Amino acid sequence: MSMDFCKALYKAAEASICLMEYSHGLELYRGYLSRCPEIPGAWHGLAICLEATGNKSEALKAYERALELNLRQGDALSLLWGGWCAFKLGKYELAYRLFKESIEKEPNYAYSWHSLAVAAFKIGKREEGEVAMAKYRALVKEKPYERRECEGISMLIDSLESLKNMRSVDQGIIEVVEDLLTKAITKHKGKCAQLIMNNYNRP
Image: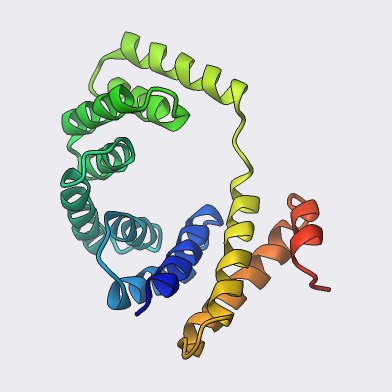
């Protein structure tokens, strides 16, 4: 499959996590992994969806694979998400270490400080956890997060437009993305009204 297809499909799969629509996410991540290059984020997303839908044993296998792939990369985001995979696997000391390494490489990413706080509390480093949480709150105050639901809808709009402009895309994939977008707009139209009005002319 083309890289453009893989990029659009991955964006839709990530959107399912933002929207907490995990059954759609299962279909999209499995679709991605069966057609596209294996990347840690796809295994991590699949693990989250498997865990959320009650398939704990398969989720742990997917977290293991995501951790293995993240550790091969070593950039700040790979260390962060690898840390969360380690945390989910009960490897709390490893998670703590990976979060610290991630912050050393990129100290201004708020979620890394939140992650470090969670791991520090878990392994009994309460004072360090409190310092990390204070740093997280300061960074978020300085640069607030976009609403995750609205971010998910925006990603789906982009993904669907890209997929529809490609030749010979599996219609089943397009239907999953369309269904997810319709559901998201219906559910979150109050929170994301401006985004929907600006980007998606749907009655």
